[in-house]
Image (cartoon, rainbow, N blue to C red):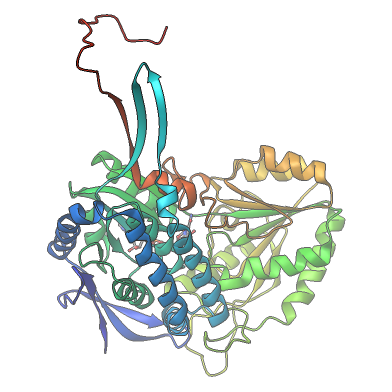
Length: 498
Ligand code: NAD
């Protein structure tokens, strides 16, 4: 059985002492193993990044950007293989994996603008013959820790920007689907990145804790579940590191009575069930305003869900695949059962789905639950499966209060034809990413991605302009060259331009 290892100082490495099975979620079988790096191996990766930093920091931004131009070409050239690797270990269908890769590539494209992004600020004559400028300097060695659900896109949110800003990097991807991430790391080196500038260690908590506490690591970007995000933020911060930790979500869509209901249903089918609901921006709750809207929504959703195809990643006719592990499958099924037990109505039940030829796969069918109420456990939790819950309310204010009261604030959306309602919603909702008739308002690469409340710990969002800020620190230089024959005496009051 293949063991997936690390990439340290440009060289492949395998620690065989501790490994974990990597499953194909469609077959339910362990097909590979992943090496779990001990502390010493992670320290080696940090040391490699530290050693590579001085030369990389002083490499002109345009040369750093050129590596990204070549990297983008290689990602495109190898897209079939990347999607195949994602499908094998994550389970998402190849067309969905291609979408993930494309959204990742857009971050590489943005990073290609490094010379423009790093220009800084300059003011001539802040005082007589005094000039000032602000530079954006790299931080040093920075680390990324990423989740299973986007094994290519989320790492690409982080390291292209970190690298073009002049940092060196240690990535700890998800141990559940590590192959695609390792493969793109190899492509990065093929693109001409010097050894040691980017290092990848596979592993679990031991590897993560080493990154969080090692004094050579200056900053940590994390994406994953909220309990872990909170731990990462607290630990990294208490060790003096800059940290952005993006967590979980519970994304609501408000369905107003005036919405174009066919459009709503089409959007919700993709946004709730695409990628088996394992997206942090998946719409998992539809809040219908008024019983008439709710009844129509349920009826049309039920009809729309009849045609959904669930199966293995390689058949592009499938709409979505399995969930990531047997344990997660059981957890999702448990949430459906708990909603039912607590009084909700399971309208379409995906608990007992059988996919011919893949009987042992971790599948959950698309599930629609009506009359969910905020006190139910399934409403409070991030289910992270192909489950859409419908909550009925009487007014838009009530719908907004639900969203604002929820612990998460990642994404949300309103379906309406009323511009005034949409404007009021986007202005007042306590959520970081908002859609207006757009179900998955994932910001494009030249904006930034991040939720509010317990969906993000830290100040700066991921990628885009906030990514540049996160991976650089400002230095402001004030300069004067006094002419030889003008010498001023000592000045004891605070210098001003008065
Ligand atoms: P996870 O939190 O289990 O794992 C994320 C990373 O943290 C992995 O690399 C894992 O090895 C590591 N990790 C796990 N437990 C740890 C621990 N106790 N100590 C130290 N490190 C630990 O998340 P996941 O299941 O891989 O991903 C799904 C979650 O990620 C969902 O909650 C989803 O909403 C969230 N997510 C959020 C965003 C976002 O942008 N907000 C994007 C994608 C996924």
